Image 1 (tube, helix red, strand yellow):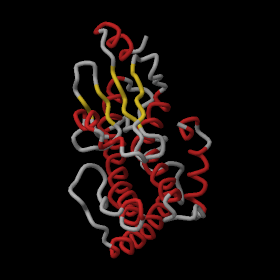
Image 2 (image 1 turned 180 degrees about the vertical axis):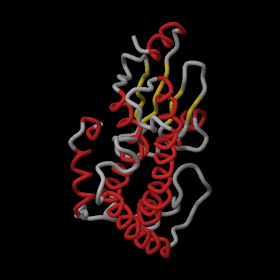
Image 3 (image 1 turned 90 degrees about the horizontal axis):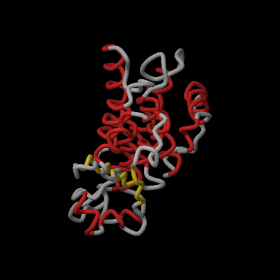
Image 4 (image 1 turned 30 degrees about the vertical axis):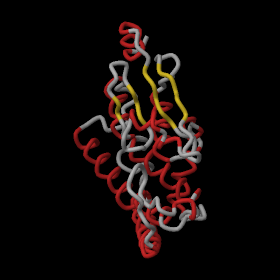
Amino acid sequence: MRRMEAASAARGGTMKLYDAGWAPSPRRVRMFLTEKGVDLAAAGIERVTVDLGAGGQFDPDFLRINPRGTVPVLVLDNGLAIADSVAICRYFEALHPEPCLFGATPIDQAATEEWTRIVEHEGYAAVVYAFRNRSRAMVGRALAGRWPEMPQIPELVARGQAMWGCFIDRLEARLADRMWLATDAFGFADLSAFVTLDFAVATRLSDGAFPPAIARWHAAIAARESAGA
């Protein structure tokens, strides 16, 4: 029995993972758990689906769990809520060190952190800028989560498009002579970038016609079991 399963059984509590089917951050957690071989049911973790399309993230019951109104959220059996995808993955990495996805050495850990931040600040941010400031469904909701009304800013669509082009160029250059993004093994930075590229395609920022190095790398990850999580 894995450590999480043993600990949960000993305490007798029920943990919950608040998830959403199509959103990129919950998908990052699902892919991570699949790579780790963590089965939620076997670990005593109930998966609760939040219907974002119906505004389930703003339901009073959910806001009592996460006042920010975002998913995913992992609620531990002591009532502590972890409401950030990276923090959730870090929690599971500590419980299940193998396979290591955040870097096995100090250098690999630093490279993973660096490239994860590049993905989030340059790639993911570009998609969010373009999507939330263009989509009719996001009128008044230009920021994710629970905020006062946030108007769309059309200029940020152009910024997102420009950022995306630069990000793709940077990613292509990085992958031109290497298999994986941060280290010699598949890791969290790869997982994060893969989810980001798929999010860009889903929101029509990208047509999915990636340059050769990215296309090779993307196909390799798409063939992994976790890609279907």
